[in-house]
Image (cartoon, rainbow, N blue to C red; front, side, top):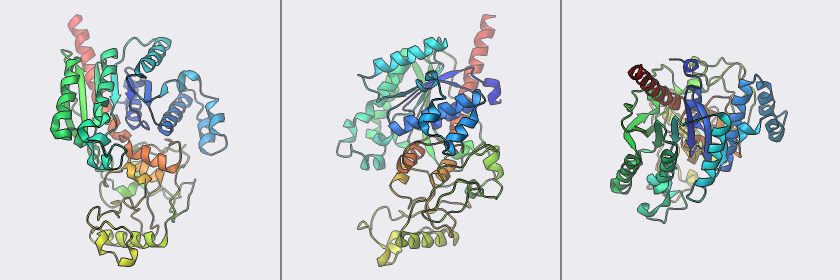
Length: 432
């Protein structure tokens, strides 16, 4: 079933949208976005830029986008070409009981102008740090008991959209810990709440690699559908690939620490990169700039890469010479220096922690001895090269690390489409 065959048949609202990984997959599958709601300034700008890209693509004006990515025009000059009907679909707002009426009013206005009578799907996942011990340890809520963390109740804001717009289906993405958080009570409360407002739900663990993403990323995907609608949790199609992670890097220029490049290398892009749509012939290379690393880090990186290349061994921090050790904590996170598994079918999970340092994501090429760039991280997450992340580099890494891989999202979207399409057809046949 091709994306062209489903083009704009169904629509969606994207909540807690982040940089738009989940939304990108749905758009690639042919769904039409009504609105995106996101509280982070840089992520909201990324969504705005991506929406502008699709508008220019539909109007055969992608040369304007190319000028922006190439630095020939400023972002303000770029956005002058984008009508308000596009930019207003990005709602930069923190969702709360106080702000929801205004958000609803904006979405209602968008639907009225576009002649949209109903919402087909709501997608999104509330910030997952409340359900993750690691995430909580790095957050401002770390001193709050997990049971009292206000982020535990963001699902109720999500539910308010379901109550108001009554979509046929919804997709709620989150981390594995959502099932066990607070001894399982949070998940029980979520189920009761969603069922009470009229939805049947099912939650299954999904792996990004199952959908053809070269990354070992596990997530809980909750799907809901209106009671008595005859819909169900989709059976997703597995995408098999013979590629390895290094296939993502072949056509990207080699960099030393602190270097950058805006030109692809002369090496031909791998079949995986072209066939997946990550790179097209018209793309401009952006965000391929490596961090500066001091001599100590470079020495550690080299050791880590040598170990990985020698039978896939991992560096233990305690095994380093004393002159290379700077951390007092010698008991936890002893694998804090980790090489991306270039010769494997998938690598370990890309995390927002990339914004802090790149020690956990060292490029597998010992001659480059550096951490991965924003563009390399985006490719591991399966974002197209045409996807531009706004903000400083730290913000770009956070956006990528928190995202749902678009290729995974597209697979989910195609499963949702199949359920909706077959459901609509069965209704038509029953009334004929």
